[in-house]
Length: 285
Image 1 (tube, one colour):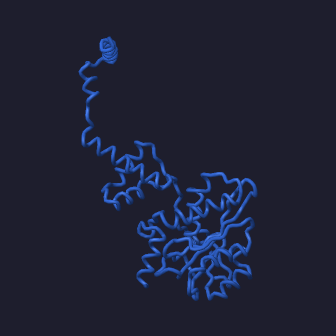
Image 2 (cartoon, helix red, strand yellow; image 1 turned 45 degrees about the vertical axis):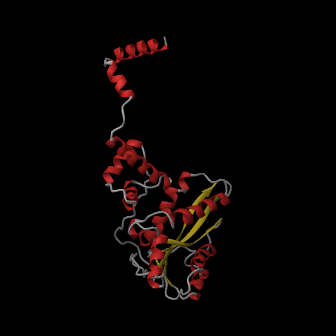
């Protein structure tokens, strides 16, 4: 009786859709083709890399990761599979170098001169402060120091006030694992925190050389500006922090758990900052 009921139901369905019953029964036992299995397998790999990056990677970086893992593919192929699955990465605006404008006071030279390349680690550093909003305390502040060779964030400080002490603390943290700081070029903007006596005294005590961006020229410090932009697009703007304690934990996890050790960077050959630093340390060992 049940078989007959199923037969008539299928017959009515096929009749309504205007295709033979044989097509329905063939579909029930159909085995996916090798091509279909390969397509689905590759889509799964794309989704896996996308999820591993916490939905931060786009097609170019996903393609690089897959090729590095022994899965040959092109950017266009990855783009198609991302589009079919509705996967979209966090888009970060690229920093472009514009024409030079503005000046630097005579006693605060722009020694770096937008030369963001370095021959080794601990040769050129850049530093800046950015704003982070939390519900309880309002605006909080993050000062970071980046090594321009590895693009690694080697020191940072987070606090409730944008002070010279915060800027100094970030550089102090960057110096913790550096045996020799003599001659390191530290580039910053002309903010009062970086032109303060406290900041200058600390750099002088470590034998560091201070370089300054020109007034109104964020592109003079493009690398650290770009990092802060990435931090906000990939982490800060995606969450609401209840207080500075929660924000501090998120910043630590992003910098130490993701940016320095997992996030590949096109400017350093699609390596992570930690890999780039480790590679240089092995050369000098």
